[in-house]
Length: 431
Image 1 (cartoon, rainbow, N blue to C red):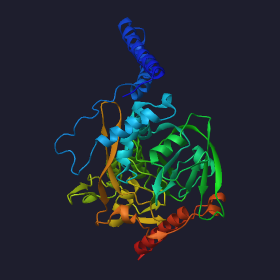
Image 2: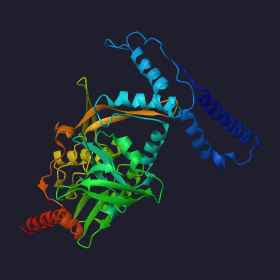
Image 3: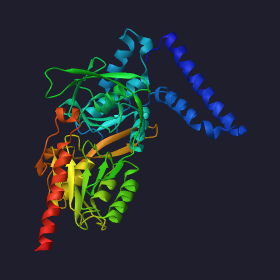
Image 4: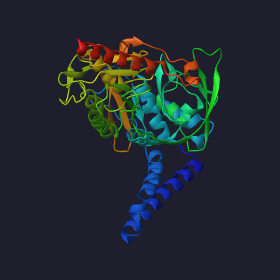
């Protein structure tokens, strides 16, 4: 490879800074000067250097036997690499580690699955923060549907919802840049940012005559994933916003409250719930389903893995209605689909998002990770969530006019169904 003098100096400076950083860490540790308190700061600085400093090894080496199933000349990759380094006009802007990570992202994106993505160390850390429920941004979950960046779930009380974003909004541009061909991770990186800064989304909504720009001031997003409310009519409402690390504990507390208060019915609100952990979804569904399959994993080779109910079913005798909409995805679809198939709940709202694929997260030594789709979800009756989503038993829309007027016809219908069930049960008792 060819390097000009300026570039050599830049690399030397960066390496020198990194070595100095390592020496600083070592000295702080040996001196015992409060290193533990500064650990996160040092870790962040070190990560920034590690991500984009270092040699790209293995150039021109032969692929191991059996690794390539087709006739692929991998020398083409390095020919393009060298051509770019030799001829690109702004040579000082070329960063080999960025090129390297970018190439891997392109490799993974070539499979055409928006949920199979490579995340460099920085993005991988942000993904972990998501699952922990804390980050800075606008507070909205996004997805790719029909090749269009789509708002899956504006989170309750967060800047996105306050600014007027709704589930189903199609994001055509971010700060004036088109989202055509954008990946989910790229969109997340563009939309997120420090608290107090702004981002403008150009959105299209079916009942709008033209596109609309919505400017949102970013904030600190701290999510509590379960909210409860015992209504005056003795109906207990449980809203689950995500299936996150805190969901199981909070939901277990909600179940104890339901058992203690003995309401006449339960409304499980999964609207705008984009999903999360599989185990948590199974735990939630198992509070209604005593035994049997909750969900089935179907792999590419036809093999299946069944996940069974955990056997508690403390809520199995309570009449239940589940609220869903276009923003209900993944784990929320697993719960809704299972309770629908076992006739443990009536589903009310709009057809769900249809995100029924299974991802695992493989971590690598440099802090990067690969989120890769390995299977599809099937409901207990064998319906593929990816292809169909969950169709409500009772379809009820929530329009923009309803939203602006603080009306919730979906919730109203759920209450109506539970009150009707109670009346029928009371009449039967009298007979």
